[in-house]
Amino acid sequence: MKYLDEYRDPALARQLLAELRRTAHHPWRIMEVCGGQTHTLVRQGIDELLPAGIRMIHGPGCPVCVTPLETLDRAMAIAARPGVILTSFGDMLRVPGSTTDLLALRARGADVRVVYSPMDAVRIAEEHPEREVVFLAVGFETTAPANAMTVLHAARRGLPNFSLLVSHVLVPPAMTALLDDPECEVEAFLAAGHVCAVMGWTAYEPIAERYHVPVVVTGFEPLDLLEGILMAVTQLEEGRHEVENQYARAVRRTGNSAAQDALARVFRIADRAWRGIGTLPASGLELAPEYAEFDAACRFDVSAVHSAEDPDCMAGAVLTGARLPTDCRAYGTRCTPRTPLGAPMVSSEGTCAAFHAAGRTRSAPR
Image (cartoon, rainbow, N blue to C red; front, side, top):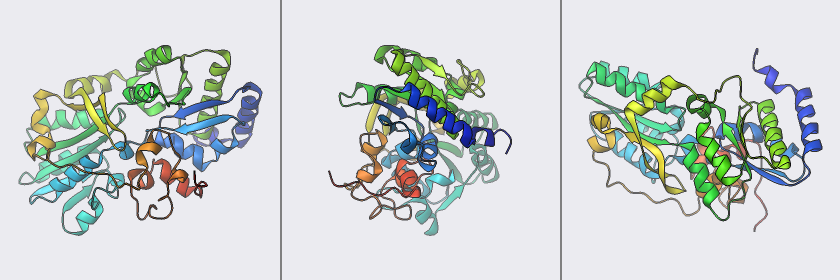
């Protein structure tokens, strides 16, 4: 396929690996923030082909995985009410809540619908003025602008039956939270190219300067990742800590101003809970006061819904890179893609799902 096969060329991959071996003289630990990058690294075996001492740490970059358990339970509490249509992207339907998931809830009669764009949810609200239509709005800065546009459109159309259940999170605060942890081993980051296509990379510059960590904005294909790793290792070997852009074909330093303007109009920065990690200050988005009427959590008063994680699920440790999926005693036994305990095993960007699909087996007991 044009403009895709070029980034999967095995001969170029071997050249980049050879250059990495010539460049790396010390052990280094690099975190890729994006779950899509994790899947490419694991599926292609890139993490196992790197020079000895270069270790990839898989970060909290799966938007489905970091959506709090309480958000899912609140979504199901809303969906179970008469007269409600809950809409969501398909990857949320099998993510386990405390006792069930949205797919099972739909099988029991709830009107849960898969949409391919949040604007589809607005259209459904227009077609069913007698029903309450809720869109489960999750994800990083990548998906937030489209959700902001749905609110603006619903406000212009005067749709009182449309609302969002918001669980948007932001990448830079998660990076600083990881780096502030005394046990953090991360020495460089591969930043997610799609997030930076929206937001640019200016927010990463003070992080690189404050913590002395290189940050390389990187794409998602094998050659993107190999080049991004090479750029990070080169900086580390040279004692530099800058923000560099490997994904130049899609990302500019200042990002997409129109998308940023939509975010600024509709959302405000707020404290946000991350599944398995806890609440991080100023790490998410919530609807601005002037759009509070579109807040499903307030409209349906589900603030009293609280949840507890399965004690056998190591999602938090996996999401922060402290553990590998294969360290978990439930991995591949109680927890499989068909019977997941946590979102990282069922999400298309989850680290546990990536390891399981690649046939990675459990580690020896520690």
